[in-house]
Picture 1 (cartoon, helix red, strand yellow):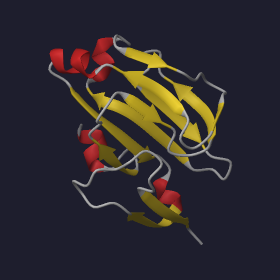
Picture 2 (cartoon, helix red, strand yellow; picture 1 turned 90 degrees about the vertical axis):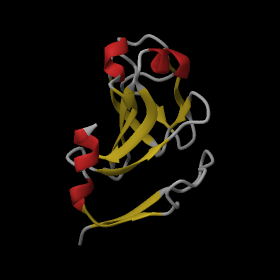
Picture 3 (cartoon, one colour; picture 1 turned 120 degrees about the vertical axis):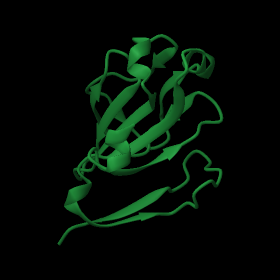
Picture 4 (cartoon, one colour; picture 1 turned 30 degrees about the horizontal axis):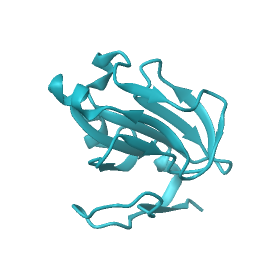
Length: 135
């Protein structure tokens, strides 16, 4: 997706899922969940805003194949299951199931570092990015 690739939605990373489970990358409050259940926005207590977006073009599925375990206003903790999706439905529709995670307010940070190597398998709860608030 050009918006993610260009960084216009913030700096972030993408993960090719090994299963259809998506976990909270940060602790915070669910600020937004789309009716299609493929994207969730979370804001941490210290103001980090993260968008977790499953797939590219998956909005077209209108929620088919997605189950959400949270709702707007819920408090979530790192590692808490946010949603599940069924990859075969995504693939059957010619779409990509890559999970995109962006810090939508990344312009507020002075440093942003990817802690994992590109192509490396990432386990749940692994630290993927670090960032430092601007001075």
